[in-house]
Image (cartoon, rainbow, N blue to C red; front, side, top):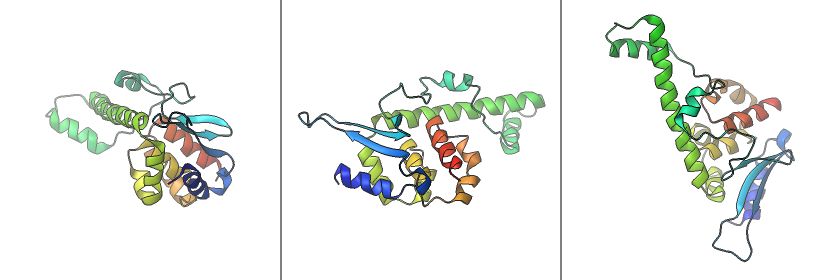
Amino acid sequence: MSWSKLKQQLESFLCPALYGRVEYIASSYRYLPDKPGICYIAVDKKNMLNMSDRTTSIRWYQTELEIKNDSDIQIPINNEEIEAIRKDTKGVVPEDRLKVIARSRKISEYAKELLSAQSSLSKSNFIVVATKFLSTSIEESLESNDILLNILALVDRRVGKKRILNMSEKMKLKHPIVQYFYELRLSTL
């Protein structure tokens, strides 16, 4: 599928409040057909997501330690996770320490998922992922670990107000760029 046709289809699915604010932009090199062009998503004429660019305003993590030390990341811990730690330690660890251990384990898992998603995003081809988005359901795109699929689904008009409001807890565990587009969509409600 040509870029202009793909762009037209993606823009036809944009939420009406975001039409004109969110743009899909691609450039390619006419005399270098083997060199991929640059694809990015702009919000209000500002480049918000360039898959290979680390200088955008969204924080890109380099290591697991950066994620663990980021005070902006709030990881919810539930009682089941604390009980699992208590069972693993055979009940000899104090109650307040159980919460710390559970949080640490969950942040480690989250960090690995986040870094994995970031690395797959930087290697992915925007056109391939966008074509996949057009052929899969919105539910699959929202539940996916692929950052780009999440973003395309969040700005989609088929995602209603009720669903947007109900996914606030899930968004806390997503990459900051996905959280940014979630907040953008939330602001249009």
